Length: 386
Image 1 (cartoon, one colour):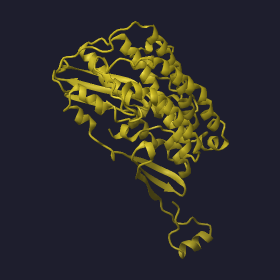
Image 2 (tube, rainbow, N blue to C red):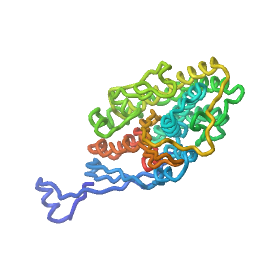
Image 3 (cartoon, rainbow, N blue to C red):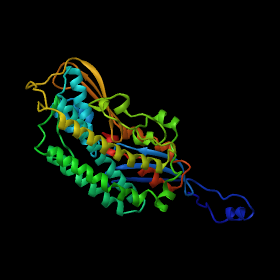
Image 4 (cartoon, rainbow, N blue to C red):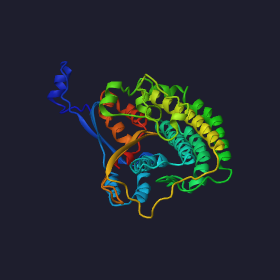
């Protein structure tokens, strides 16, 4: 920040048209717990009100998940894996079970495949709704978060009914799912999806055309394609800058190769584009959920999982399973030595790469724009620190 040094000779020099001696201010944003996102610290260097450099300082929530994976069997790992991005628990579980099933050469029952796909899309909507509500809140608009939580509760009801959990579902199992669908559950899912779709314009109407919101987000925090490729940014943030990549279409898993997936992209790459992508992706996921429900209704009754031995050992070898999580690419690199625990299970989380790019985005912006940029990066700090 511009701070005058001395009031004597420098003041006289300033009066003669020379610049005052100044120094940069180093400002720490955090570490504090900003609501649902987690504990993050930013180390900013300011020149007046303008940011000249930014350094994300991570690690305050580090729980050593990757080392804990190595001392737990494959059933126990699932309960840890679903917690790094606490808004996307079901999606987190998928990477683990897909990696183990691939190593085992195991084919999952078709009903489990379609149910997993349905729950992954419902979980995607839940994650996106959290950010659609919290982002305007960070810019001073309190009303949208109430609407977003109303829709979240509608979907949470059906997710809680089938799994018993509100955040950490623990419904995936190696070889399928925990148990079969409750009687009439698909009907309740259809009603919930229809209700959310019908009321989504309420959220859109509050924000999309709001002059204050547009003034704070349009042209702010522009992220270009080259920087995205250098930092490995993925998910809605990358697609808002024109990077047309979605693993559900480009490297299909579960039942995505049988679904009409529309990948949402924008070209502006600013805060507003990122918000628009998130909002449009909710609509796409609701349509995909309907398609999954229709397919599940057509399928005959059958098993929802595979029978497993009491002690599950994975053959020696290695594999990499990645999925399109709500926040971006989530990958698990599994190395096995033929034992009941992995020798190594490396997690590639979306938020880690996405938040690192702040050091390129923030310089040149005003401090007042920092909150708008930070909120538009849609990260969960547990997903960064692991």
